[in-house]
Amino acid sequence: MTALKRGFTLIELLIVMAILGVLAVVVLVAINPAEQLRRARDSGRISGTQQIGRAWSAYFTANGCLPGSNAGVPCPATAAWGTDLTTSEELQTIPAQVGTTTGTCTPGTAVNGWCVGTDDVENFVVYNQLESQQRISSCGAAATTAFAVFSSFDARGGVVESEPSEGVSLTYCGQ
Image 1 (tube, rainbow, N blue to C red):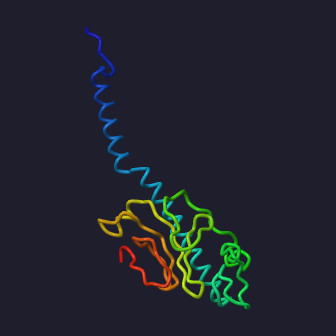
Image 2 (image 1 turned 90 degrees about the vertical axis):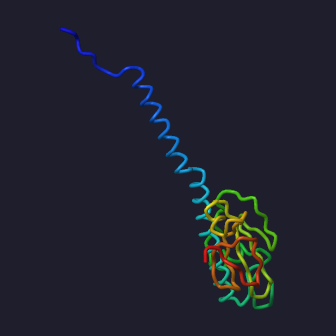
Image 3 (image 1 turned 30 degrees about the vertical axis):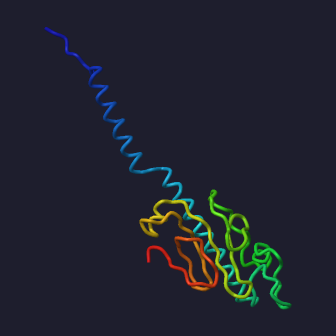
């Protein structure tokens, strides 16, 4: 009587390991963890941009001037819009910047990484550069950048392809 062999051969184990390795690579490529992190940071940027934009609108409604504008005697504005929004309690704190972006604030000034452009009268735009390829692609196949934006001129927020300016109607992506 011969003894029964139990277990796997070395070749069978190597084949199973190779198949598992290929499956792991396919799953990682499909999930793309780096892109998932970029999307998460962009969601924070969009949320912060909307929060700051609404606070600017509320400040203007309550005071008749833009924060940081020093536009007139009845206006309590200082030289720093972040200070005006927190002092007036439109915001408890300026949201922290989510990650880092390579963008600069061409129109306006930055506080905590949030860019704001204003005409010092009634129009403003709050914006931040996005990094997720999904957000950039939503602006079209040829797009190379995307910005989260809140515009007082349009009275809304969204995503735009190029760095926004205050006082002009913006073209929003994915619309």
